[in-house]
Length: 418
Image (cartoon, rainbow, N blue to C red; front, side, top):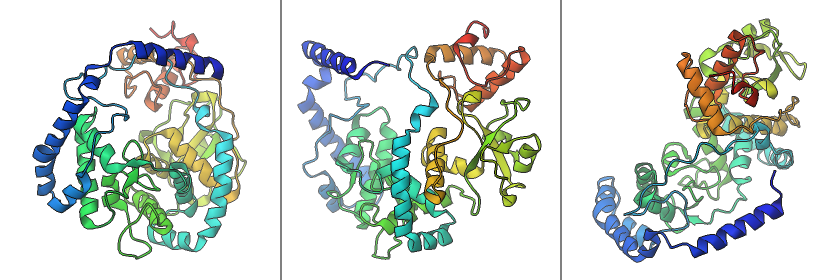
């Protein structure tokens, strides 16, 4: 790993070198682009907003004095070309274990346990209403905004308007901008107090505006949903989100398990679900030594091995995939599950250790994926990242090739998988 001092020196050299380069064309024409932005608001966005029920008063309040935020990422100003696809040869992913910083999890877990006690009565009412356990709600709250303590310095309207006008995903942000204007029109929030992240996510639960319109609830009954200042509204809105995305009342998110060597690791994925009793019948046991809860035995479960045989192994429930609807990442959902367990019962890190994986170049994994595709395997996205379809396809190929399956790419397999 590069030492901090070296990283800082390299970054300084890069800044100095960049200062000697000519400015990009769009940087030299910012005033012209700003004028185009104002014209776009008046002649393009404005008419669409009016059709969506947004009044002239709301538009004036939202856009009065508004300028583009040139510091945001992924901008494609008029007259410039979108950035080329990022070089696949870079080592752009690390061991899954790097995601689970123990100090951070301990800090969030300790604070979360205290807050679960503070808001116990409200969480009980929320769980009765939406079916989502309090520890799951608190865990998401902590992960998204540090239990509401994270600073939200950006004007949401400024961010969304900038990205709707000149980003790599203009249609998506245009939809979000209209949703944000709808929030102002309804009187839920003013343009000046609608604060969010650099990506346009709002408030303590970090909802995009379309999610706010779908899921935010006025749980404290003060007349409007307030995900910036109201803890009851924030917690209930998170629960409502999960409920509408399919959370199964009374079920866990999943269990860390031990999978015997004679049980194929090439069985993971939501499309290969079967009753947890069937998994248990193969010899899969909870790593804690506890039995699977009796109500879970007849219900569906799925194998999950984010690092193949080189890390913790899991049987997860459909609720795990509901957590992924909040943030489409296996590691995010595992983080929430682990943090929720700490909040509920004082649990600790996953018992199995994460192996030293994830150092391969994306181009190497990409070549493996292409080779597997030519052999008839479905690897999901051919993108140089080892998702569950790539992992299980690799494990299946390893078994057929007489190699002990690891279900994870490593350098020793590059020459063998052609």
